[in-house]
Amino acid sequence: MPATHRLPILRRALTAAVALPLLALAACGYGSQAQNDGSQQKVAAGAEKIDGLDSVRIGYFGNVTHATALVGVEKGFFQKALGGTAVKTSVFNAGPSEIEALNSGSIDIGWIGPSPAINGYTKSGGKNLRIIGGSASGGVKLVVNPKKIKSLEDVKGKRIATPQLGNTQDVAFLNWIAERGWKVDALSGKGDVSVLRTDNKVTPDAYKAGSIDGAWVPEPTASKLVAEGAEVLLDESTLWPDKKFVITNIIVSQKFLKEHPKAVEAVLKASVETNRWINAHPDEAKAAANKQLRAVTGKALPENVLDMAWESIRITDDPLASTLNTQAQHAVKAGLLEKPKLDGIYDLTLLNKVLKAEGEPTVDDAGLGVK
Image (tube, rainbow, N blue to C red; front, side):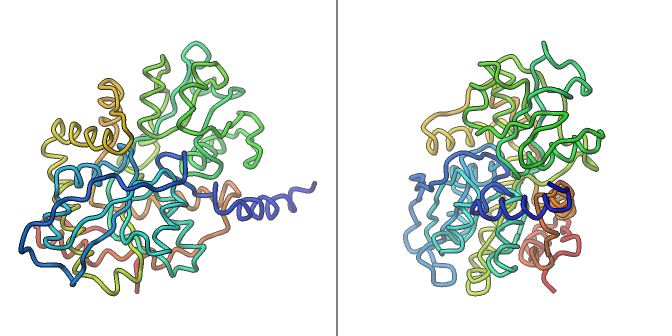
């Protein structure tokens, strides 16, 4: 088939797959159901409700890249900021399901990766969500079998896993391959490198079985592979200016933002307070995050895995907007995304209000904010 005809077909194939894979999940990509994490906390007697709301519904992932949400819930920062308005939480395992929950009104605010945020925004014509804050940077690595791959050049001809076709790590790996001058068909994953889309949950088993030679994956999957004998060949942060790139953002439904700005501001205040506490108390924060992971998933991370994963993630209020735009450009370059219209995806007004009040530097929307 002529190359000029293959790109539209690829895009249609991705679209037909219920938005799945393109820009599916930035952090973990397994499962699709939400669950209440049992973390609804008691409201202080007599506390005043914010915006007259009985509750604010927050969604996040049971993953260390969502440390702000994990720690903020476990330590009670969100409930404290919301006063008499109860915090209700839902835990998701895939980006599309969280976007669906936001669209349906099942949640009001969510922590999510850049790719599903882009996908959700563009597929709605810019009408369903806004990115209102940052949460985490980094936490993605190329880890390999040291017996088979000893240098970056050795990756050529090998079998490397990514979490899902078109997800954030898949796009990053395809872009890295292209920059080295190697050729890979984005849809099939075949070429100078075999790109095997493998669920993060089963990637460690695939590595142990020898069916993959390495993986370009987020934490804690990368550290789980290292625990199985793999070695870190490349930390994706080294490919970005100042070693920063967005892995988790905060989104809100536009309807909720318009109708309940005080509640949104309270959540952002709690997020900023949580991030400050995490950065000031890294060991306590790590323990709090793992305690909440146990509550969410039924199993805490082993200490050696948690320590390594935690070390590679940077907690930040800055949404790192310019890096989200670059990630979208990489997806376009790979042929996995039509050029998106991202104008208006950010509204950092309330975040910057909170940061100013806290004496912190304000953050930038890279020209993609609401006008």
